[in-house]
Length: 431
Ligand code: MTE
Ligand code: CO
Image (cartoon, rainbow, N blue to C red):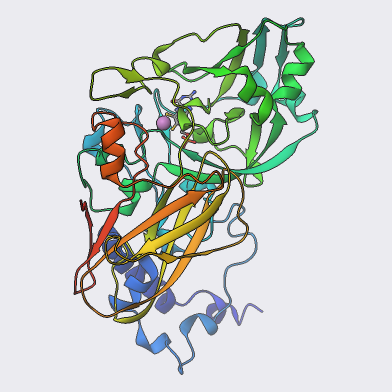
């Protein structure tokens, strides 16, 4: 056993390869290209490639105790949330973006869900946390997380989109990036308790028509929510994708408001006040209202209308060779299920019906695919989502006609990726 030891420890060779591979992957990732393919093209060790026996086949790998909480392969180190530094004054009141262009299927891994905080991510000891429900109820109650775990749980898949997603694009194409243009959305399998169960435990009075949800973070975020939504499908959740909420997603308790703007999904949920009218706090007056051309503002624009994004190909995923391609992306609607996605490669002259990947769920991301032959000529890629109510995702021109261009929020228009004849892709606007 001891005699064998030098042979079975990881060969320095292997370590060296890993290091140089990583450096290459990191370098390529900085330009937003896929880490793995990039690493090979940037000079992977061909001695490891078939028909040779690869280095990693010659030695034992790590034991099962090497990573009690596993991490992605180091070759995927470029798959991360990113922020745009100049966008906000400080990272505590800011946003990072989901790397949609590097994800598959419909679920966002927990560590890649975009973050939007108004006062930084609170770090809460669940032993010290309670949710208070009071106001127009027969019996005000305080729930510890442990109390919440005792109610019958439900698990549901939902997308969350910040109302400001694609907000930079109101005046035209901005950043040459799928991540920054569409990445304020994530899709998670939540576990928790229907809000109506907790409200029933407190006995909501007949006069009650609204509630105010409040977060326990430094921003003390609050939003008014109409009672009909609270009693429909809102949840108080404690888990995401099978494990407890991440601190940055509201640990230990978060409100889920399916299909409605992300701002209402109060994180670090500490208080629900039941009342008979809305509170008109900051987040529903000066913020999260939509300025129109005539100077008035739309308010209580809660539902996230149908929208879609082509995630491959896109500026970060250029086309590498002519011929057979798969155009892939995600579509979603706050009104229910996606019923159809159309894709054009010529800026809207001809539309092709994309294949929707199962499962297609209500208020959840839906993955779509379209097989496409690229001739090497310039192309203009767009996708158009249609939901089960018949709502069709608008062009930017049609949207500006009714909404103007001064709003930050609720830009669900189709965006355009221009494919150049070298395969590079650019975010453009066509009219
Ligand atoms: N809740 C609290 N308590 N504090 C916050 O800053 N940000 C809101 C919402 N809930 C916020 C909050 C906004 S604007 C959005 S878009 C979502 O949380 C973002 O959720 P995420 O960080 O899980 O992506
Ligand atoms: Co938001």
